[in-house]
Amino acid sequence: MMPPPRRVMITGTGTGVGKTMATAWLARSLTARGVRVGVYKPVCSGAVDGPQKPIWEDIERLWESIDGSAPRERIGPQTFRAPVAPPLAASFEGREVDEQLLFAGVDWWTGRCDVLLIEGAGGWLSPLSSGLTNADFAERLGAETLIVAPHELGVINQALLVVESIRSRGLPMLGVLLSQARPPRPVAGAPADFDFAESNMAEIEARGGVPALGLLTFELRDGVIRRGRRAELDLWNALTPRAP
Image 1 (tube, rainbow, N blue to C red):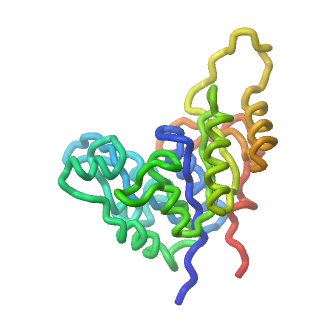
Image 2 (cartoon, helix red, strand yellow):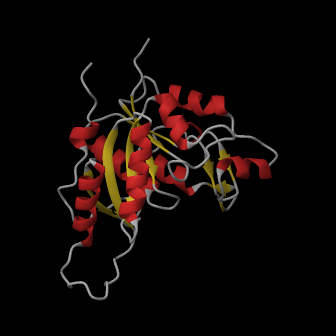
């Protein structure tokens, strides 16, 4: 029997914090270094209308990040149209999230990748199904975790709450990755050259005892993620497959 790939749960402090973009960026970065990468979103809710059928943009971005090397239905096997929590979105369609399929979807990647990046739905404690949160799912898998948090006011508190919850479950943490989708606004009363990103990362590291891995800024241009100011950001050592 083939050993399973290394499983890394990409979680976040909430919805819309940049998990998909960070996961896609990581997939591209690792693939460029010769690592066989799988991407998996166990359940995805929130579709837009396409020319012929609904499109789940998160799944499209993940599919593009591995150059379409796996079928979309293996990247996101359970999809629902409403942009709400998956169990609620499923109920709107007279359906339920299939918990067995959540785990079977992970198993499919065995032998097909070295590292499996699993993007959660919503925040760390958001419901994934009627009986499981993202946290429960990660714990059942024994997955390592990577926290994505938006670089904005309040991020220290948000990140530390997730760090504390993950630690209480005994799961390993690779660190916290700050994300920034748009240029920051000036802060009245602060020096013009004050680096709030460095300040936030230092606070998270000192108070949470977890690595703050850097700031990722991004723009979507033909499915390419552009790294931002902190060019030394590199998860290569953290995510390189371990020797048996």
